[in-house]
Length: 127
Length: 127
DNA sequence: TTAGGATAAGCTTATTAAAGCATACCGGTA
DNA sequence: TACCGGTATGCTTTAATAAGCTTATCCTAA
Image (cartoon, rainbow over all chains, first blue to last red; front, top):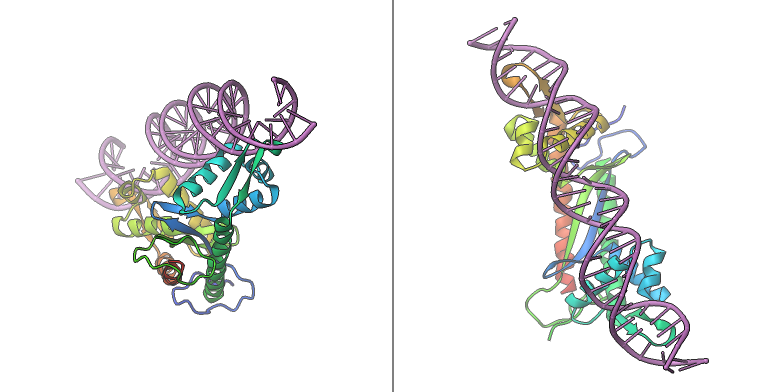
């Protein structure tokens, strides 16, 4: 026999298997709203290790168009650009994540980590 | 002069206005995944005070179809139904939130409250 | 000066999700 | 037994979103 959802946030079941868990999504807002979430962080990481928006997008099966728009939006709304683009030149150009971009990635993961810790704690409590 | 995102999670700006904040969404997962989030909680609350799925949906500008499907999904995946339906009869029928449904609403808000507390704490830190 | 490959950006098409419509069913009440 | 208004559900249509195509631009190296 399994238990149902409880309002007490305390253990009230004997079953070993956890039926419910707490899920979440976290992101960083800038004044105009959603600024950086896990999707953009992944994109930044891919730009970091491929050196281009095109290859980064391809790798994660995102259209170049969407990837480019995301980069554009991030750069426009940040004080310092998170991605630096190179037009023309050797190999036709490319893109690289700036120091500010790298910091944004790290910050996001720190925030996410804190939230994961709490969500796991809550998940334990509701089962 | 404003600061940019910082990786230290510590204060490093002098500006009084907060530029960044931490946003999130939280929900309860059941074995098959997403089970109850803020949208479904609002729907349950509307069913509670209108006594019908039709009126609840109308109130929140949701299509009856979608509302009905949500209720169906919640009931199917919960041990005890969260919404009880009345077919035919006085007034053509209706729907009411069960005790289990009420508990689910309360549980969700408790989880959300905890997450809000943390997100606010983190928002302070990143500015 | 030409080749190369990536960024830049408009415009069109396709995919997907949501909404809307229509109709059957249900059961107390007048 | 006919009516009422809500549930139940398939089918059609629309809207929102994403993807795809195209062409221009850029700059270095050969």
